[in-house]
Length: 331
Image 1 (tube, one colour):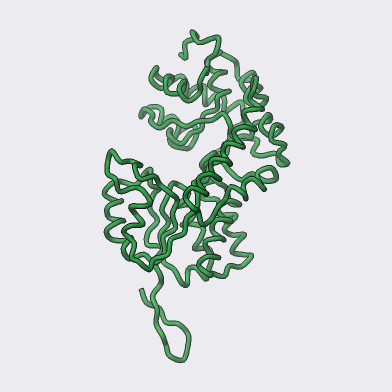
Image 2 (cartoon, rainbow, N blue to C red; image 1 turned 135 degrees about the vertical axis):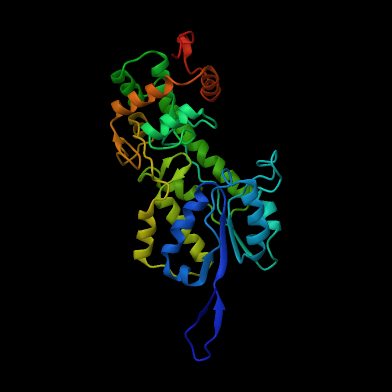
């Protein structure tokens, strides 16, 4: 694409090509950056593709062959060289960078994860079609995306009623407060170490450390909110020498591409981390809201569908999940 630049010589120039490569946070940034008019006037995002965990091998090959060699700027998160290597060794960020032309600019930012707000939570990498359908219907999201809290699973396995489950979800169990503090510290330490190891251009661990107590920065451990994404976006724009207005910054902050699901903030977490904000009080998806009691009922219905293999997977993620009542049948 060519556009006319205003001036006496009628000089033409092409829009520079930029791509953002990484996990689910990469496509989120592709929806935030174009809210800056100066960016739109100078750059064209070659595509808005899925995160590296979801992109197909065919799409990855096409990206490497058709788009990467023509890029002016690659914004990326470090992806290890052996990621998805059983399919092909072409998903690592260094491999992608090796296909760039010599004059292309690279800008790196870290994988943004923070387990402080949901310290005892996990997702499932694989689920049955029945579980996936249930999650989409009841929770408004795919089964692999749903966050599972240790307290809710334990309450289910111990046959606690809904009111008891809500109590333990909010108040936690023995040692949970200490785990919340440890999870927050561990998340920040891991990010900081990665930033140093990979010489990250846009470090974010310091920003998260300085602000996670005063404002909600993450919706789930892997889904940063508007404050985090707009900070990364502004630093990208600074590196590219793009001018951005206060109005555009606020529009970026409100966009919230990863805020499609919000979980209630557990009371014990808020107290343990001395958070100065209440956090979400209900479960919210794109479709509807659920109170904590309604959320418990939905999780209990989901856990009725879990087979022995799924419970084994969860036991590996949550050691001592059932504790003394290990003999209690999950169904």
